[in-house]
Structures are given as structure tokens and as C-alpha cells.
Image (cartoon, rainbow, N blue to C red; front, side):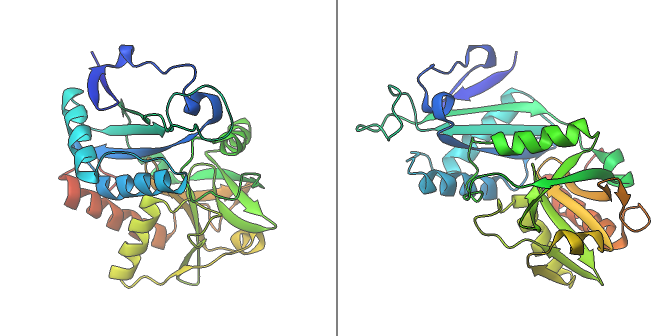
Length: 289
């Protein structure tokens, strides 16, 4: 039997139900996080939960938990479900209230759920690289909030799926923003580039870790916008996310990136990122290298 957390209580996952007047169901009025688990240990758990609380604050949801309390609950959930390698999904909504667009006059108790999923590392694709399409970024202008409103992302991901591609690289007025579920990076003349962390993108936790790794290891890194034309001329392109880690993109829109193989800087970042996982979570039985 698998378990979930519902408003702070551990219950069988099959019993975790949401009220039809929950504002997350009615409006997408809420936020979420996905945390990676390796060896039964939360990877960058505090960073994810800090961002979760920041997202709550940005949409004026008051969650009465500290990061330490949330960590304790999630560690219990991982242990209860005997999860070794996978993810934790957390979702916070404004709560249950009769349907009205404006916030309820009396703030309801936020609905808090969490559950786990087994999820392997995509090692083969990380070694060989994968492909992407490009599509216009039609999402709202607060992409820095990890909102439940993901329809724009879903439509982009569906386009990628129909094109038999792993990801969709989005752009606004020819400026690359991010993927449908990832951050996008390019490498040119030894310099790693990614879009600045503003309201056009989500400041990914994996993105933040990669920037730290670059700075520590003297890899030239710039948070700067770049165009689709610059992307086409890149020496290397990769995407990053909680579940895909550092994923080479070796073909975009049916055209190979350079020689169509994982580039040397991307490979170096994969090595360094894996070391960060091992440092925080212990030895990995399924390793890239």
C-alpha cells in the first residue's frame, strides 16, 4: 500500500481525495513542487521548499509550515513508501470555497497534498542526447511562480510529443525563454549561457545548482538572453530539470547541433552534477559515468 500526505496527515494514497470546490481544481489557484529522491534522500529538498514558500507568498497563500516541518513530513513519507529512487510531488491550493474568482472573504485552510512516485534516471538519453522542437511561448507573464496553471506548457509538450521529440524550446519575439518543463542552455566558444532568472522563466533548482557548479569549477557562465538564431549557431545545447538533470539536446527542429553528440562542456557538467548528487545523497547504484 502506498501512502500520501493530506493536510499534514499520513493516509493511504487511495483515500486522498480533493473537494470539487477546491480552488486548485476550479481555478488552478495554487502552486506545486517536484523533488528528486536518490537513495531515499531528498536532493536539494530545502531549496525546493524555499521556492514553494516563495511561490505561496507571491499568490498570497499562507502555508503554516516551516521548511524544517515540511522536510520532516516528506522524509516520513519517503520512508513509509520505501522509496529509493523517484520523486515527491507537493501541491498547495488556496483551499475549499464556493466558486468565485476573487479570493474568499474568509481565507480557507490551504489544501496541502504530497505523494511519491518511482522514477528512474534517464541515463541512456543523458548519454546519447535527445531532440527538441521550437515553439512560441504563449504562457502568462509570471513564469517565476510555479503555478498549477500549466496549460501553455502542456500544449507545448504535446507539440513535442507529436513531433516525436523530448522537449519543446519556447521563445518570445525570437528570444529563447525555457523548455515546456525545463530550463534551456547553450554553449558558444566555451561560454555557458541561460536566460536570466526573471518573470519569463522559472528559476529551476537544477538550474541554480548548475550555475553554482560552473562558478566553483571556473566554467564561464552568463545569465543572458539569446535568440533562436544564436541557438542555431551554438556549439552545444542542453536542458536541465529535476527529473532530466543535465540533458544534451543534440537535434533541434530536425537539425543536428554540431556533430549531433553530447558536447564536452555538457559532459563535464553531467559529471559535476552527479558528484553533487552523491555528495548529498550517497553512492548511486545507477550512474551515468
